[in-house]
Each structure stands twice: as structure tokens, then as C-alpha cells.
Length: 111
Image (cartoon, rainbow, N blue to C red; front, side, top):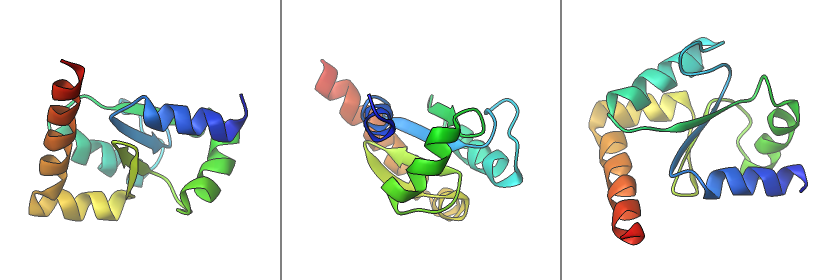
């Protein structure tokens, strides 16, 4: 499996996925830390990929996503954006709403 296929599978197989620097328990940059706080505030589980431990993903994902920076939040296979977008969405309630709908949609489709 090449790296683009690997990225596509990760995105497809995780309802809420953040590509970040570090881990949710130990973020390696301030933007990743803020992004994890925003996601955690929404109250749902999420998957993560540490791009510092996955150099191939760190190099290929920005080209694939047409988004140059990390973190990157993907929900239901769609790129939502980075830290600033997540914080804006958290502030206006859109992030929690989007995540709730994504989780609900997945629960219904798996029944």
C-alpha cells in the first residue's frame, strides 16, 4: 500500500481524525494542543495520527489535502481545517454540532 492509499484509508476508517504533532496526551506544538482542547470540549472520541512519528504522512498529506500545515481535522472523510478554523467553529458552536451529526450519522448507518 502506498502512502496516499494509507492516508485515504485512515481518513475513511475514522469518523473524527486529527493529524497532529505529538499525541493528545502530549502535544508537541501549541497549535496541536489547542486543537486537541477544542476537540475534547466537544465530548466525543477521536482518532489521531502523530505526524512527527510518521514522516511519510507528514510529507504527503499536505499535498493530498491541499492544506500545508498541521494539525488537520478530518470529519466523515472531509477536511475541516486547522487550529484556527477549529477554534472559530468551537466558539460559534459549529464544531460540536458537526461532530455530533457525524457521530449520530455513523451510529444510524451501522445499525
